Length: 56
Image (cartoon, rainbow, N blue to C red; front, side, top):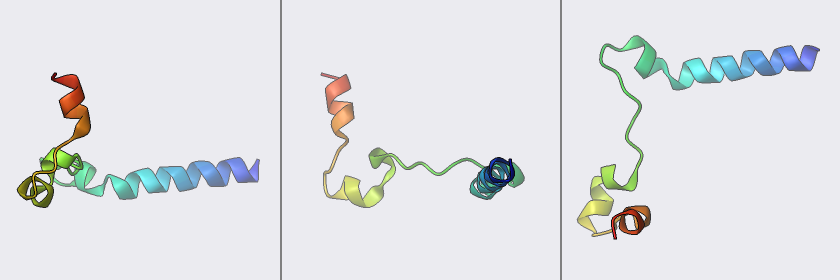
């Protein structure tokens, strides 16, 4: 029972810490982590493979 309670507390703490920007900043959003959102990869011409597969 102690391990379950500890796990729930740790997971809840992780969720709050990961979402600080979203929860506490007005207009906050999670960062865009997709390849198309990375400027350096776009400069080098690296595109998302999934995008090519979906839009053939």
